[in-house]
Image (tube, rainbow, N blue to C red; front, top):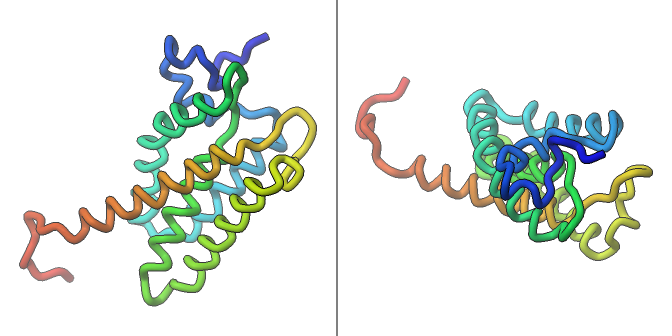
Length: 170
């Protein structure tokens, strides 16, 4: 039986799958691992960072889904690990750019880089989480790339003069 929310070629006819494929999982353990991976950057981000992260996850989900479709051929994708990698990259870069939180940010980025490098070098043998599914390193790399692009775009937008330019900030 085909899961109605998983990401597969039907996404071209049923575009909601570009979002819901990240919500569908291969079981409770898979969902909990993804939730824990998303929780770390969420807890480390400040209020503004969490708002930005929520918007980035919502906007990036279909872009990541389209990228994943090119990797799975006739298969399916379920899980939020690509979005978790986006969150780690975006939050890690934001923290690393702030003088008071450079170390946690650099640790997040370093851990993410090592994880993706190991997955690319050793494939599923590196991080086989359990029976029933295999990680998709390309989704993790694409998610991290989207996270860094999102952080860079926001950093650029923060530097542009806005309506409050020149106004005193409390």
